Image (tube, rainbow, N blue to C red; front, side):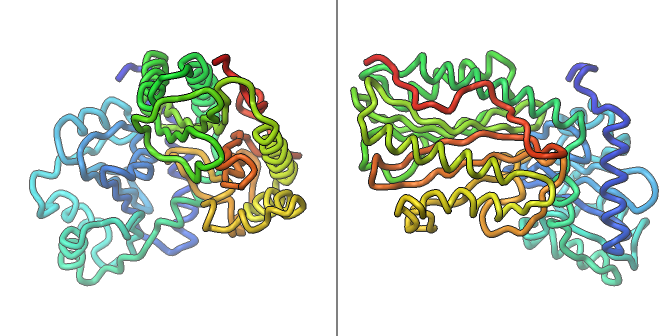
Length: 379
């Protein structure tokens, strides 16, 4: 990791201040973030480091310096290189000795919040409870979600760069579309372009076909044919932060039904974006999107039978809090979210369309340079 990738001191201090304010409100003496292999955002928020092992913890006391507890020397070196946490211990065995010793020292009878406590393996959780019989361990998953919700200028700069990778990835997607190309070959071309541009990772779903397509999946061996609408959620990561673009393209000239479908989805995206402002709730945005489908007689396709959510937050997790569906989370300035009314309708099958935005003082700022038109790729 280069010096340029060190977490700025002011960013580290801002995070500590936000978390400690939330801890004080929740009457916590310490905050313990847990990271299994597939949910590392909370530990990365505290350490800034790219971690590779299956288990890691980061600990922030109400007073004093934070600490990290990782499963190997490579992760320890990664944490030290970022410079946000100086106290780094390698967990030598499953007894969690170094972590237990720190918690016993800081809060033997205190109240400790555990972020992602619901993901802590039973044996590890039991070891902590046995070692701290007089401490109270409570869930802090929601606390960290809310603390991470409003982004700093530094965080937004990382998301802006991830959004430029979205634009790049979509161009690579269109360039690779051709009759006979397999879905996995199309995705491979996008992955290569994004990794060459410095993306840490990319989460991507795809679906190709006509109006029989009901949803998106990992890439298959299905080969593209003229007339196919090819849908994707393309989500690159830059310095820990994700941004997503949702688009559909047609191989050849789009049919009237495909264009009709795009028009409704464009109206739904525009309506959802119009609802984005400080003081609005995440559910206000979802309702604005869903009302468009209801006006077109397609209200049943807003249900969980056909879709999942109408968007979500952006940050250190690819599907970040808040979910834009049923959530009364109040939006604030510098919240970053994507509005995407992705769903199946009988008009042209599953359709995806969506853009990430930053909540501003009086509305929103788009992050993408890619237009939302239905792309048509020569067949």
